[in-house]
Length: 369
Image 1 (cartoon, one colour):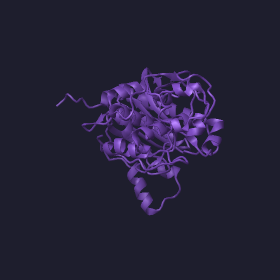
Image 2: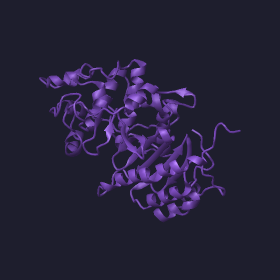
Image 3: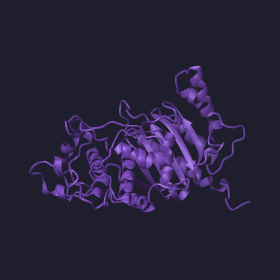
Image 4: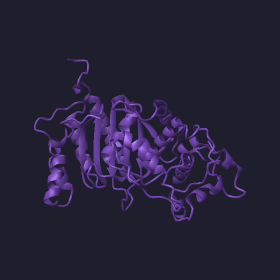
């Protein structure tokens, strides 16, 4: 991914942004902040309307839980702002956006023959964890059902999360949940369902989910995915608490925008990306379509595919506009602010996407010269 000298395109329009939002820094930290917010003397817009984006920056600055915003167009970072919190190259908790990364690992596992496909039954892989005399529908759950939240098992999220996360065996607890629908039925959002995918992948590969993430994704992509929490049996958390820096999350999004090949290296198949973005169910909470670990919506007539983590850890990909956008927020807001995620969607829908549409004319013509 190219990094333009103008990647701080809006810095000149938002000088002092961090100083107004952060505690008084130490001299070293102050220098780092100046580096992140000061633009080159000659700022050139290459595909984002600067006036519209200046308004986006002001709106972003007014959101106290928003830590960082990065906007790339056609692989070039045009706006990059650390508002508060960790540095842009420091791994942070991406919460349930981990489900999207897990989906990528499953796609690679299928391509490598570690898993046979999305129609593979998970019961044989998790046979030792199935409850005695359990519901026969456990035998019908497929890999694809876990990825699209259509396993039918009762939720372990929301009001049920505490009991599940403090249980002595997360996999067995999730498999013992009563069925609320048949496998392949409606979307039942549950982190326990994603954790079953991590357990099944670990069993099939004979390796931890973290080692697969490191070897199959992080190393070829040139990013860092450090170890994250595990369950009492040592299975890496399948649907939460992965760590990636904002810049590395952007590069992951770029991999998907580019169809699975980046810098001349094929990492994931284009077919898997298409399958992942194909709507298979719909969230009863947000109304957004859901595929294999990705939500989908429309904004101004453009398809937007996005990963969504608690608190506002967002990765947006808008293929028709060659846009990839990362927004990182406080992962543990107190009190919980339900409106914050809506505000982030508004930044994209009413600010960044219009800035990209009106900035079309300023994009370099690759056929010129």
